Image: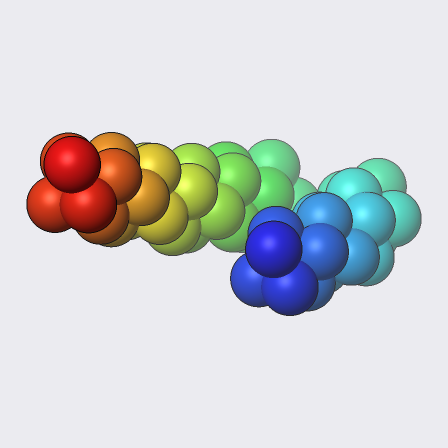
Length: 52
């Protein structure tokens, strides 16, 4: 849960700077965040399946 909070806080900071950053840099940042969230989702699903 703490990791999600940190991700949301970082997203807020990143979104605040999007207006000052070139579009390619913004897209790379968005891709990195999406990849991190995908890894987190896969780990959570794997942990839930293991717990059963």
